[in-house]
Image (cartoon, rainbow, N blue to C red; front, side, top):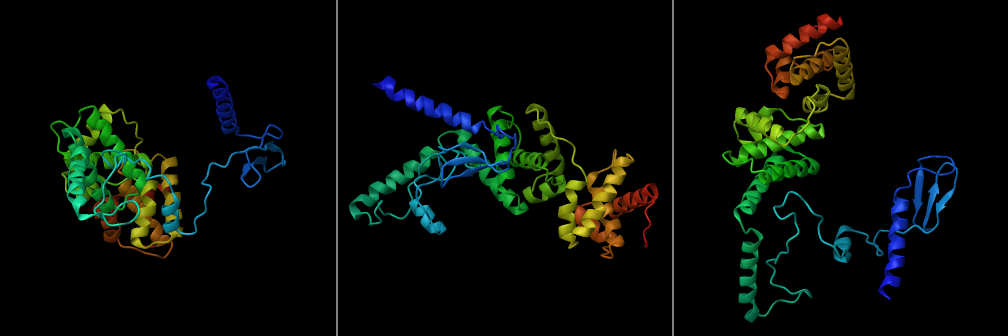
Length: 321
């Protein structure tokens, strides 16, 4: 009996895996495939071939018209996250003192619920490693919020910190410096880099210590991160200076020309980004001073002036100063 019931389940899983592996139409080899959940069909949008007519809708069987209704009808909890020391898998006892029906708990039971709640808090953080993670990830979330970093960068930074804890790399180093180094590495990995000065200001850590810790983590965790490029700073700098897309596009062209002539080797990306924005702002009649550009890029006016002169002379750019 068991063998007969297991056989159809195995065949169904095998069929689902086969469908998941379909990436192109067997008739015209098009990759434009659409899923029609109303009819349960997998269709090629180019030639109209019905590749499968028993497609399974993996969504919920209920409808919701607002977030409150969706939360009420959902039967699952929040997804796993690296930003909580237990990855969000442990249970919790809230402070409402109400049962699952919304009724108040009798007074005789409140003392018992209080003790359960207290022991639940203690059990969630049971050893030194979990206490370290709980404190570090809380600090990481605070620092990331201060810098306005998105969720994917926070998750990446938390994963890097967990790897460092697992390899016992935080011994002898301050938690803040390792957290700051993890955030710095995550920003570079996501292609939205922040300078060491910005990280140091947001985390109240020493710039040199963050750089030293980052190099250590990069070596021990074998992080293969490419050097930051000036183009990665243009969008943020232009936004902070109140410049439009024309200036950013012009600055990108200037950086591309400089790369083609191999003028950016050995020079800081933030200084090059600042100089290209300064030139582009003049050419697009949205002039910003060297001081304003330097403050946003966290470099000195001398750096902006030197990079500006090099770009203008080497690329033969006509600028009306």
